[in-house]
Each structure stands twice: as C-alpha cells, then as structure tokens.
Image (cartoon, rainbow, N blue to C red; front, side, top):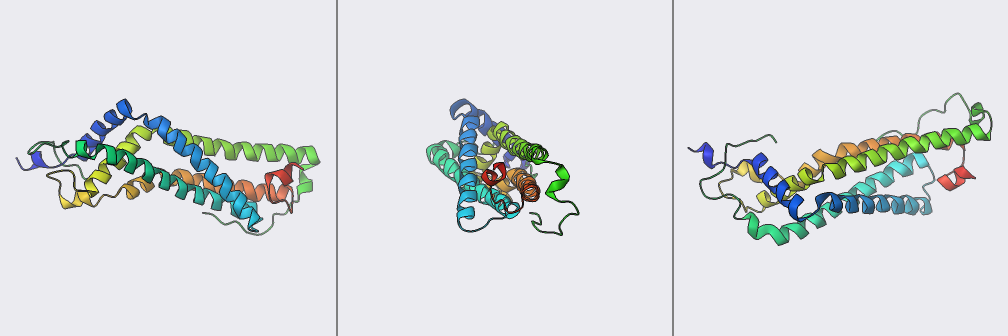
Length: 225
C-alpha cells in the first residue's frame, strides 16, 4: 500500500529517543547546555550594565533573550556534533518500502506610570529586604522550573531535532516534500520559546519591583546595600 511506504515521524522520533538515551546521556548534555545558557545570561546582564543600561526591568529580560540565543546556538552545536557522527546510521533507518502511516502533526513593558506607593510603604529597611528576598525567590524558582522542565524533556526534544535535521538533509527515503520542510529550529522554538518568554516576563516584573524597592539601584549588589 502507498501509505505503508510513507515516513512516520513520531515512530522515528521514538526510535531515535531510545538510541540517544542508551548512547549519549541527553539529560546530562542538556544540563550542561542549561548551565552554559545561564552563564551566558549572567554575562549578558553584566555587559549590558557596563554598557550603561541601568534599568533592571529592561536589562534582565534582555539578558534572558540573549541567553536564549546562546541556548539555540549550543543546541545547534550539539546537533551537528551528534549528527556528524550518526548520519551514516540515519541513512539506513527507513528500509525501502517500510514504515507505518504518515503523521503530519506536527516581552513586556518595562515602563508604565509610577504606582501610588513608595518604598517607605514597606515600613523599614527590614520590610524592603523581605520584599526583595520574596521577589528574587520567585524569579529564581521560575528560572529553575524552566531549566528542569527542558532537561527532563531532553531525550524527546533532542530526538525530534535530530530527526528534523536528517529530514532537511534528505537522508530518509520515501519522505514527501512536506516532511522535508520541517526545520530543527522551528521545532526548537515551538518546544522551548514559551519557557524563556515566561522567565523573561518574571524577571522584567522582578526588576521593576526591585527598582521601586530601592530607587536608583541598578543591580542586586546595590539593592543589598
């Protein structure tokens, strides 16, 4: 039957997931990528501060955006490193006339009017410190949750990206042109963008709130002092 010869992407993603879980420690690789991404975000925030961007409400989400570009770049490096080593195997994954049915399924406003309260509404310095700690804790929790959710989903995510990379390279036989249009970057954005967007939004809100706790402060160090 004609349908029996069409490529089943979901089945191949699952096969690829089992392979990389057995051979390549995908969660460990994603944990390293996440750590390097966080380092990139911190360096970006520091660089933006040194460049004169003092507003935390603007600098923090912008640093998250730069970190996301670092994340995508690291994904690209991992994919091409693994793909270069596995592409010969990929070419033989779908024998002629095999496979099941086809499955085609495939930041914020840093400004605004000043509120009708001042840092003094928190009472004394201790109250401001408590507000700062709570704000920082929420932002950190959201960032860690996003990181761990990506790490936990790493086997499936990386398998999808490897399959899409192979599709774009034409290494699968009996694949219709609509399948070859799937790009790994499109899949990566669909699976991860909302997590980074949530982190950027929370960091923007935290930066705005912290700035009102200590007007004129442009870093966590200033706030702590």
